[in-house]
Length: 308
Image (tube, rainbow, N blue to C red; front, side):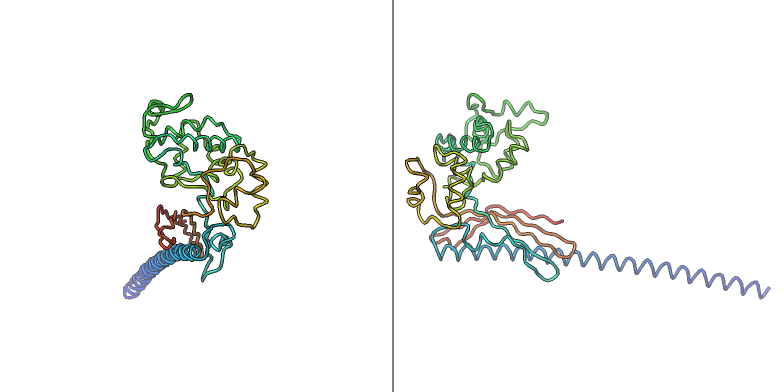
């Protein structure tokens, strides 16, 4: 009897030890999970701070650049940041792009929301340079102009979009993002991919910076210029900088050609900051406007952030 009681006590003791071991293991597992979660939060916060620091650094560069010279070109410090550099525990990459080296879609209408005929011609030339249908200019114009009348012969207003499987209306306002084009009649993802590197969606009317413009944009803003001629101008430009509109217009390749709505400086820049810390990634994208008499002020026009 005593032996049986001792055996029962031993079994109970073993069971208690097993339960304590299971509880301890679960507690350790929970603690490890909590520690990992806290580490992820800490890493995420660090990555966010790095993206903010990167954007602030670019802001300083843009302000200093305006103080140094009155032009903006691919030779400026802000244009040479693409190579990633090491930070503690990872790396950061900063890319800055002059958005005035592109064609601004919002140039298609004036302050009253009416069609800007000269800019429509420029946009049509851009489409042709990219081997796209020039008639796409009409539905794009209808998307942002103030009226509800379709531009003939290929325009599109609410009557076209309201019968879609998922109906919607035209914006009848400026483009906020170039990706809005994907809602415009006739613009496929393939067409958008072709256009995207050469267009912007900036508030109001802006000039094209000839120091940063792409060849298709040259062909758009310079009447009678073929894409091959525009490509030759970009290659000839090389590392040089046009210091004035007059100097650009005096270029031999442009002799006798109508050149309007161009400049040699910019106010709008796109800033992308990519941060990688261990397995954690963060990305921010911003559109900055350099303002003030000497460009000493910077405004954030748009901002987005992603974590991966």
